[in-house]
Length: 183
Image (cartoon, rainbow, N blue to C red; front, side, top):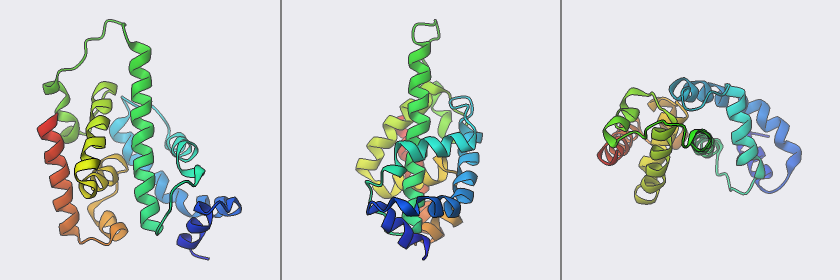
């Protein structure tokens, strides 16, 4: 049975396929988590395994989503990782609230999309903007999630979505510009 069929069975509440799914997707999820955490370490000091576990426990294991394909699963996983990173950043901000740390201005947050370095405040702000982008342009948001948060390359995203590399680059640029304009 291929991964797509296993994922469909799992999302249809057949929990017996979970181990087989995890064995198959773990290498790619681990690679994505390493890339995401390399960029977000200041805001989210987790190990790749912890990030995957949190994403799985919070979102993916519930099976309340309908997966269409292996590629759709990885897109869902990218969003789940983003949510974990942003929730952790929110939690870290709440813990340090009132600790004398001044909030960042928008000018100080702007480099987050370009530099790949984030602190909890900029990551939370970016998460809020990603929610808005998802409402306005879901395809651009999907590419930003997969490229920026999950660390997939343009080629990998093209393979996962069925879009051409040119279409992926265009959506990445559109999403990136949309975010820069609002940061």
